[in-house]
Amino acid sequence: MNARVETNTDSDGSIKLSDDMHTLGQRARAAASDIAIASPEQKTKALRAMADAITEDASSIIAANEIDLETARKNGRPDSFLDRLMLDEIRIAGIADAVRAIADLDDPVGQVLSSWKQPNGLQIERVRTPLGVIGIIFESRPNVTADAGALCLKAGNATILRPGSESISSARAIHMCLVKGLLVGGLPEHAIQLVPTTDRAAVGEMLRGLDGTIDVIVPRGGKSLVGLVEREARVPVFSHLEGICHVYVHGDADLEMAKNIIVNAKMRRTGICGSAETLLVDKTCAKTHLQPLVAALLDSGCEVRGDEAVCAADPRATPAKDDDWGTEFLDAVIAVKVIDDLDAAIHHIATYGSQHTDAIVTNDDAAAKQFMTRLDSAILLHNASTQYADGGEFGMGAEIGIATGKMHARGPVGVEQLTSFKYLVHGNGQTRP
Image (cartoon, rainbow, N blue to C red; front, side, top):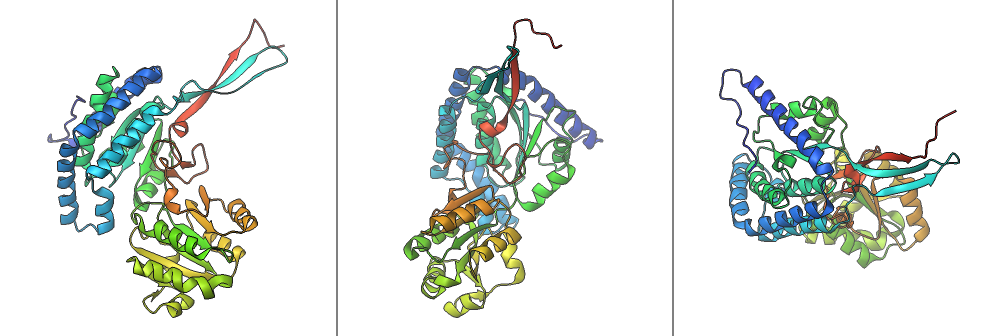
């Protein structure tokens, strides 16, 4: 089992924590060297064993999760937070299935991305290579423990996982299953390590890079966490910002399709980053579409905050405030607005969105093309729910998060995004004149 790093009962706890965290980094760096050259068969064997362990230990994971849920309830966390935190047999089965899906993916390490021959005879290849050691800082979603650990391993990386204080028990239970899998695969147990303390100083140590042992930081959580990481990190960051996601119902939208999409996009799971937070309805179809769309949301248990036209369409709606248009509710609440046309919809999304995921519902392919060309969100959908903003749904097995930046990784961060590349140059004695 992974050696437990005890933290600070001595008189200088800050020094003790710093030393312990640097030990984690050194172990991760040593493990990364072995994982980078591990065979695809070894990694696949380890990942399948992890999935089996998660399935077999489901009752222990649920018991640990109950401890976290009780802590969250005592801390007054909202229902949306509890939903993100909660694990049951169905969700644990989903976690195990995601790990198995990752195991079945093609191994990215060593893949030749392109090759060419220069006039001087040099043969050049661009080949995928692991990033090294990846630090994952996350809050309430215990499934990130398995998703991140498995994805990083498949991509040949070592991982240091730092869960939030209210998901620590669940994360520990899942992490034990990951270590079991590593041992079955004959891989170093320190390839996936869990920070054993909830002391926030541990986050600061990770953001400083643990003496160069961390190559990339991935924050998975709310705006405050991501902002902290972006401000203070001294290593590269894959940013996962707010999911202020929009659904725009164009004038040429099929009403039944639009109703199904918006109810699913908002209400399937309200606490995930791909949940729709704003509905925009084109004024050219408002007479026929607005009231049924608003009613469908209200009837599904969603609070609607709308403009004047929306409130007139259904008296159960409440007037929207200015800041509702840029809010990630992560709850059964949606802002609804009637918009003049496609240009106005694009302008609204560009103004209030977070470049995460936005959708258009329309039978007009030209309008859809304009929407998807002119907006610069990481994920854009035509006639589909924003809840598809998920690495598993993209065929990636799982994801660490949805990166909304523009450097290196964007959109769902899967195994390919957790690699870099290097150039292999083959000659036969060439020297440069």
